[in-house]
Image (cartoon, rainbow, N blue to C red; front, side, top):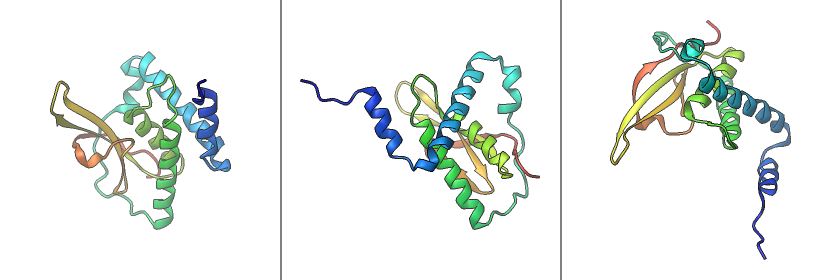
Length: 160
């Protein structure tokens, strides 16, 4: 007799790990991640160019207070929690960074999309990663950004 929990039981346990008030937010963020994945897969680059376009970082980033830093970290954590339930969607660092930047922009917080790569021994050769820089706060979006060399930085979005 197999006593392994089924997929439904695993989903219920995952939901129970979250605070009750966070579940609607995580659900909305998950939908945004899924829609971003579909958008990047289905639509041609010209429709996604503005979303992904590398630009120049702000030369004088706004200084964030402790309250804003805590808000940024809390929003980032909610995006990470939503992305941990990927199911059939690709919840990669790029999708996480794009959605997180959009949410931070709605909260009036600038965040620059940064692209980076590193050499990896073995078959792959190089590995790419995307993360955010929000006023000097690095939001890793799934992997440690310190391990990558930045080669591009997208436009900051939010309050100017």
